[in-house]
Amino acid sequence: MEFSVTLITAGLLIVLLLAFILKNRMRFFCLPPGPTGLPIIGNLLQLNRKAPFKTLLKLSESYGPVMTVYLGPQRTVVLVGYDAVKEALVDQADDFVGRGPLPFLIRATRGYGLGISNGERWRQLRRFTLSTLRDFGMGRKGMEEWIQEESMHLVERIKTKPFDPTYFFSCTVSNVICCLVFGQRFSYEDEHFLHILQIITEITKFGSSPWGQLYNVFPRLMNWLPGQQHKIFHRFEELREFTMKKIQEHQDTLDPSSPRDYIDCFLMRLSQEKHLPKTEFHYDNLVSTVLNLYLAGTETTSSTIRFALNVMIRYPKIQETMQQEISTVIGQERCPYVDDRKSLPFTDAVIHEIQRLLDIVPMSVPHYALHDISFRGYTIPKDTVIIPLLHSVLKEEKQWATPWSFNPQHFLDQNGSFKKNPAFLPFSAGKRSCVGESLARMEIFLFMVALLQRFTFTCPGGPDSIDLSPEYSSFANLPRRYNIIATPR
Image (cartoon, rainbow, N blue to C red):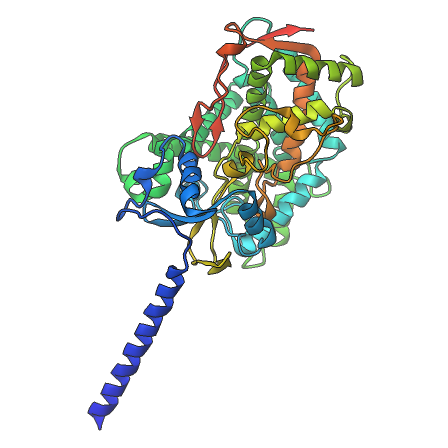
């Protein structure tokens, strides 16, 4: 009798085990198609190490707009083209709201902050961050005045002899986010401020290098191996110390009746919820979220403006036409306003086309399947990294007449009026789109118009010496650096 019971129990266990295996095999059988990978390293050898997004775009020609690749051992689903990206991030936004656990960012932020969070932490921090930044002027009149003031500081420091504008643009853009987050701006001659900006540049370059991408694939191995990753994390600690010092200064001078900036507002919320055991408004989230905002709000926007000047030099007739339009609408004396955008259709079109061509974050920041996702007849299993290939959207032939060349007509109708294109997604889309999009768009427009009001830009080697292809290309497409000449108009 006991033997029979044991036999029946064993049989049931075997049946349950087979059912579990079959269920999981069926789940993985419904994965999107993709190239066969090798053990451990997956499809890494097939990727262009300097521009992996180009390989992914090429592979999609064989495997379709939804495909599976393996970045090392990590299963990754890549979404290619506007239709697939929009369907996932917008139409199925709740399914694709997860953020991928990037090892580089996890170590840098210690797992806290808005950038890599999910679930309730992400919802609370994003809601608070958006509302607070709006309260302090993001996308509104107050912020416009800050940017106008900063543009005057920039114009005063532009040199007529050949100079590298990288440092000036980093200072200018960083000061805008500093006003929002820290409640202050820094002098362009402040050596500590310049050192912090240099650190941000180093971190961005590392993240866009093959070495930085390798860290995200094999973090344990890279922590053990010698290399520049150790220097970069030391640099990150310097940024953390800078941020913590600013937070301490705010704590020492906080007036709850008159919050000055994002940090003050966060500290007030932290005090209000300190008795709640599961609150997300605590010190670690404050430090890491401030780091997120500061890093994201500096390098990408300053690189876009630097690339814009490269385009102006490469296409002098485009620059001249923009200047004529600006002179007609605004003149050369008064500060530009965001409301001027609707009266400057050609200028607006050029700025949009610059962002499209630069393609600043070609693979976006990875998303993550927090549960099994049904998408276009496939199953994307839980714990799968998801890459919305923004590069494929901004360069898609059926969305753009000449996707691989600079063409402002992409954003102009037959009457010369500005026209929108839904495939213009440099800031991604859906619930994980960039929280600072409205600020970045305002900065790029106001800074570019202010510069072209007062200067004509050239370079010693002439237009043909400008190469618009990126100098660093992987996580971010970073433009090449040139010495330029600014001739007062």
